Amino acid sequence: MTTSEILMAYLTAVIAVTGVLGAIIFNRQLAAMQGQLEEMKAASALQREQTALQKEQMRGRVFVDTGDGTVTIGKSISINLLLKNSGPTPAYNLAVWSRAEILDYPLKKPLEFVDPEGDKPNILITPGIPFGITVGRDAPLSEGEAAAIHGATATRRLFLWGRVVYKDVFNVEHHRTFCLKFGGNDGPRDKLVWCEQGNDES
Image (tube, rainbow, N blue to C red; front, side, top):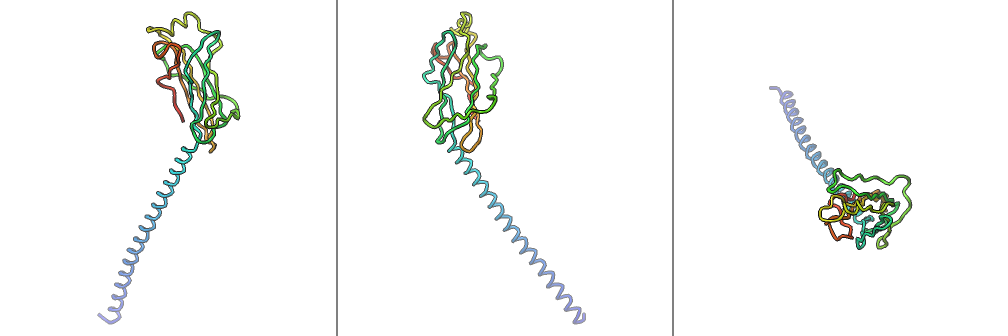
């Protein structure tokens, strides 16, 4: 082998080793960069979760309070409920849809909860200051209806249900549904009782 051939072989070996070392270094740098990117993604996700949690803790949260739950029935059925805000900030643009009907019990099909239609009024509920609403119907109980909802063998109940829509201080819309029943042996004769379903928040 001539001197030039030896030098060429040596140079080829050096280039090959340099390439291998370069590839190893590049792969290590790439792995380090990918690791840093994953850490940044995890930190960003954690920050988003913390921000979402803070907003959830700070937002207004409207719920329905029945007061003492007493139902007084005369020429019409009218039940006064209170909307309260358990959060630390106000809830606004509040609107309510509600209905009262005497229905078979147990219910033969789920109740329908309707979103209030039209523009949302600029009703504000601040923490600690309740807002009163009235749920009911114009017609009084007939003798047949009264017999059907009272007593141990009562086959019907007076249902009061509705949906509350409002926004929090972060301009996010929320929904609260409520369902109450009256009659039978579900509770005291003149008191409202919460339904087993239909009281949800989103």
